[in-house]
Image (cartoon, rainbow, N blue to C red):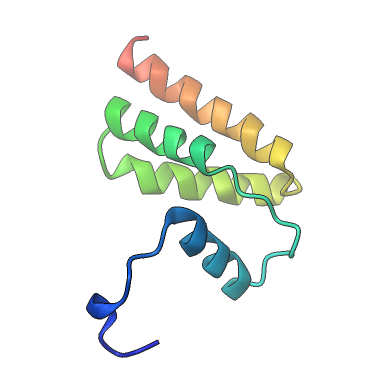
Length: 91
């Protein structure tokens, strides 16, 4: 990569997440449900505040890792966070 990142073609979310997954040393078979994560971030941002989006996604990811790190763990804990956010929003 060059020092001037502004001249490079922007990465898609899939490209970025794939690069990040590799660099973070996650397993080669790691599957990331991008729409699920984006929906979780949206729900937190709209129900709580914009800064709640990255905070919520981090905490769900951390909790999912502690629970075993499966896709089912991520989905289950995302549902918990979404339910809490929706309760705050009144939906």
